[in-house]
Length: 242
Ligand code: LP5
Ligand code: MN
Image 1 (spheres, rainbow, N blue to C red):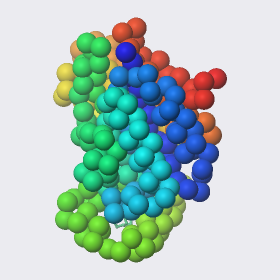
Image 2: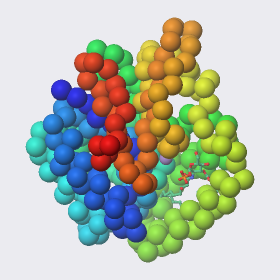
Image 3: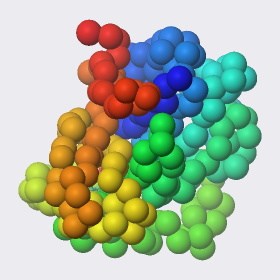
């Protein structure tokens, strides 16, 4: 049985095509998998679980629930866009929330799962921002704001983020290979799966413990894609199948 991995779908009502692709994926290839890992940025942004009743969000939750009810083990790791997903979301979707990083045994191979943002250690401005918004006290205060106010603040932040990104080089916004080596060594793994950079690839890298592999998941902006791992190994596949 296969385990599937996706990330960076950035689902939002403004891009209904993405939600349709994901729906078809959940009703299609995901149904015959043993497990599906959502490795961050499933949503363009998540305001808080009290926004789960929004019709767009409710439809996605229902589709996730149909998959988990069918017996597929569903796991969610937060990305930099949807780290406010919480226990109420997890219960409604029938999924388990997993930490970043998460080490799993994948067909006998110790494998490290991450969203990928913490590997971008050259992006100091982002990491400072991340530390601030991941603090429990900050999140409590933010979640106490009315939904409309949260939405307005996120819209302002998105503009700031785009302005800042325009001043950063592509290299700064990619993973740092030393950070990759450190993460693999810290968890005793020689296989890493992550998203965030939107640069799908299969990289091989030399480490002190031998050759390691790094799978980078694609985004779902034009069309989608996923990583399938089974006893034969891992491969990146297009969705819709191409
Ligand atoms: O998202 P992406 O891929 O375009 O860019 C990311 C980094 N940007 C972000 C910000 C998100 O896009 C904004 C949406 C998040 C919604 C979460 C909801 C809760 C938060 C609400 C806060 C009000 O993650 C970008 C990276 C890029 O990836 C590549 O790795 O470079 O990082 C930035 O651009 C961040 C800036 O460098 C620093 C932040 C400047 C804004 C300062 C405003 C302070 C806000 C106060 C918060 C405590
Ligand atoms: Mn991301």
